[in-house]
Length: 617
Image (cartoon, rainbow, N blue to C red; front, side, top):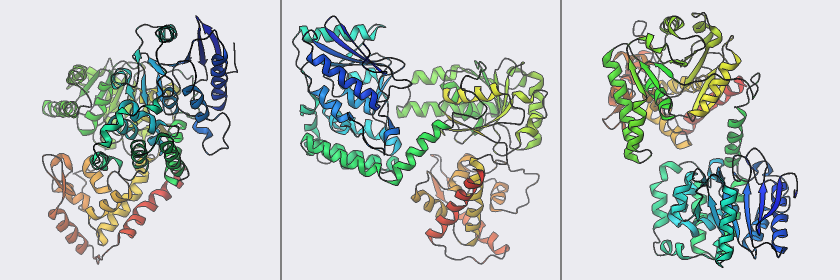
């Protein structure tokens, strides 16, 4: 029977099955909570029912709380009310998980007496990604199930734990073996009843907290070991405090402390900003003029022109997603060097444990190196990542127009240049767009998708879909100098350059912005990307510090020196050479240098970005 529009109730061989169907992700909205609550009450009162299975239809188990309810008046039953009902149910409750059990979804599963999941499922408490901590007992129950260290890592990393690992940790009781999760969950529930198993309540478990109680330095060590990753963010520290409460306080007092910490974050500006960013990323997928059901082109093979830092990073994205890549360079030396760097990056990931040796072999097996543009003839997408000069890019696209197959998408990775001017060199401007990756391209999540005047709807739709495939946040931007990201950064960089002339040094500026919360400052960022992006040796006029550095061969991390000196391990150190160059250049320009306070550095770098962003909007 239908309890309400999103919850169904049925009895199968003495087992009540409560099925939630609330697309797209079965968020724990008020109607969902109310339906489950009534279903559990009905099952508890029915003498013919021996156990209860809670399962979801559609693509996933509960993927979290309904965060659109945050900040609004509460609607009963609250999630905590539903949890109490399930945890204290007189009959075993089995949570049957497929897809993802995230946030409030996992917190609800944790109050069930047993948990079964399909092997492809995953579990996680990702609230720190929106500046929060688990708010429905997750920080108190998870340590009691998987142990304190594992819980700390799960909560502060927001990582989705695969079902096999979750089972090994004790988070899942059973891994389903066949394709019918519902049938297996019902059979398992009947087995629990037949065997007279106990109704374990996680709140009563204490054994896995004892190790932390016996190691008072555990939390300090965890903080120290993750300080760099947590820098600038409140939520990870609050999550640690909440887990500390689980160890040091009775359960109900720990729940109260978790609630207090959650509310403090929810009412703060940082979480509000992170939630804004969370929703903004999702809104970015809705592009004006591109309907959700817009047709897309099949991308089975990708070509990348240029095996340098950017081209190699771009290629790695597709290889990691299982898409074959043809990588083209102009010389065997450059090609071999680029492929060697890619292999080294994959091997470094394997050494860190973020991938395996088999992944290195699989990814590299998908790569084909070439010295001929003609080898791109079978590619469905070709991305140009050559030198940032219009004439060079136009020449490449004119050649691509002759060799690429009909219907192939032709993309430029240009950081600043006019996509329409590039497309004009082809006979197929509808197939041309910008796909601007940020350095390092295999790591940075943002992908600017630049729509030209003639770019076809299905080309944009394909690029957006492909961005998701390779783990990027695709954002469609207009065709203007610098698009959005670099246009805002250019405003900051201009002011940073002025500060360096007037009295600051590059590492002063970088330190202030790093301390404020940026991953790195503008000069470290330039060194990482390469100072010679957009620099033309033939036209260089020694008119800026950057030009002088490039003329000296100091072109960033890749050459071992830029604004900073870089050692073999890529560690950056302030450079006496750069400092002397800046002082001499300022003197030639007649600039009287002065001491510049940190506050002035921050304001002069930050405000131009804000202003430029406002102009873009």
